[in-house]
Image (cartoon, rainbow, N blue to C red):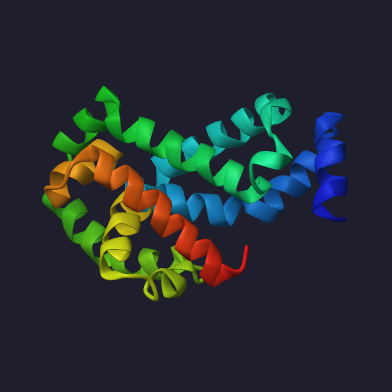
Length: 176
């Protein structure tokens, strides 16, 4: 089934198409979410919420504004960032034991390798150093543009402009 056929069936609320959608994209989306949250159970919960959002909001997807995968990837990333900013998540971080920190550190390197299944980091590395840093902060670490501005000690407007330019350069490399 092509992506267009799949989307057509999802628009019709076909449950088989939803299952196929989950099978096709769940691993990639889970990787993005887990990279931000660093907690398997929370990441699974957020992933479930993401697929519910996709299902409920499929009518808001506009093909002319971008690829479907980019649209669902943004939903996943935003959901993970929302979870990071929530009080519940912040309180749970305060309650971690020392054993969990060792586990997180050990697990972190293997997860980073799994997340990049599509190999996007290799393409990002071909960009200018400022682009590598901005994309790392905004897309791989989940910083807001304001937080990236503070981290890099540059004006917010500059971060926004650089981000736009860097994404354009990345698209050129990817020939998208």
